[in-house]
Image 1 (cartoon, rainbow, N blue to C red):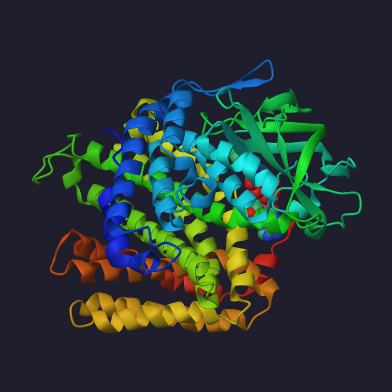
Image 2 (image 1 turned 135 degrees about the vertical axis):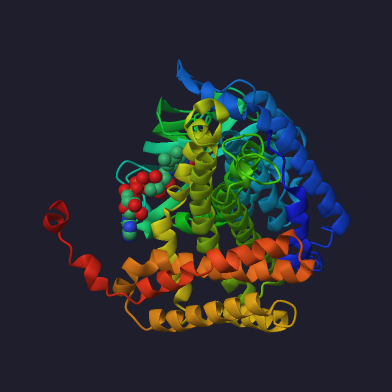
Length: 569
Ligand SMILES: Cc1cc2nc3c(=O)[nH]c(=O)nc-3n(C[C@H](O)[C@H](O)[C@H](O)COP(=O)(O)OP(=O)(O)OC[C@H]3O[C@@H](n4cnc5c(N)ncnc54)[C@H](O)[C@@H]3O)c2cc1C
């Protein structure tokens, strides 16, 4: 069954679960009226279904390759990208002053979810460009903005993000790339970057690399890093691609999945670049891009999970095996198959709601400058990233399982989802690093932002007691346990938090999922599909928080006591 964007799910979550109307009521997003958002979601869904989904298998079967220094892209990708650009989707959240649509991050997040479900390899290209537009809007000089942003929005040029080096992955501050002042306002950039997504292609007139490098007087670590925009072709006096810059693709990586997305090793050899933001202020500038990119990667996981779920559901209604005694006569009737499908569906909803709630907080923070909204967005970002991508992995594995042996056979496409989504829990900060961010920086307020969320969940659960007493009690109890564990966690040292960060993040997400399922059930009323799914979640999935949170109380020493010799026995 071809992928179909879950437009009605977004509409339901916007209207009933994450309170999108607050965003639309702000002055900044006054144009994001209900009608406008409904129309945008439907149009974005069409692009995903009709333009991107048809090239999903092409990317896997005909990977991008390097030919005489130029990356040749998978069949159909150039045309699909052109249609995305023509639709104005590259400027969805860019400022209207810069010829963007100026729409809220919440709407852009829904679009990313749909595009990732349709074809993640291709979707990464517009996502990189969207991130670059955002970084330039916030940190570049007016001259750079005027030159680059319109061309990035129109799709004539596209953007990449160059942080990683062989010796600098999670530890970006260890990077060795150098920048020298040329004396004319430009800089000479040298060094090698690895794993650069869409480092080159054969359909953009220019490719603009955002590169992190260190000036000679930059101190070691992240504080000494600066950010530069380094285009493949130097813009001439008319702003058109002119002389070739001294940079290139050394090779493309052979990888587990995402074969349609070229992952490049890039070499910069005194390449001309322009400073973005302040000298030595590169990490601050890059953070603008990375924060929203983390949410963007979270919904890459959700989008792929949605696609894997749709395909598994369709297969289960088509495959006959054994006597089922059920209504469909297909494997769907087997209780275990239905359990897997319900698990997939329930976690797609939970992770999508968390991501959209995070997006609403980002929008509200931007629109109102309110510190509480900003703290909420900051708290939810690592959860949205890590949980969304974990769910992408888990759901796509379940998708294979529902297919039985056919899931292991490439032609069904079920395995492609699992291979493609695997990296999402690694890039943009591994999920381990996201969890450390949650238990470290995001709890530095003593847990204040977290407690505000717990308060809100408990108020919601109290209100739901009349209509859904059992589910309301489950959510209320789980939140209390999470609150008590958070109180414990903020009382212990950072060193002790390290080994329990991942289970804590997961438990937090499980409780948030319970809250959103309950909210959906209350909004639906009666005993409809959302209420039945919520009951399943409360009985089968929410209880996971108990074992996760008991791990948080475990001693840090049990992990650190294990030496290399112990683990080699
Ligand atoms: C397909 C693909 C596309 C990518 N695209 C881009 C791109 O466009 N631009 C770009 O700049 N980079 C890109 N990356 C790089 C990606 O962001 C890094 O791979 C990622 O940040 C992890 O770095 P690393 O691979 O060096 O792993 P390491 O940093 O070596 O991590 C190895 C393990 O150690 C753990 N670890 C490391 N440090 C800590 C710590 N302090 N505390 C606890 N655990 C720790 C990690 O969680 C991980 O489990 C891409 C990678 C891939 C595979």
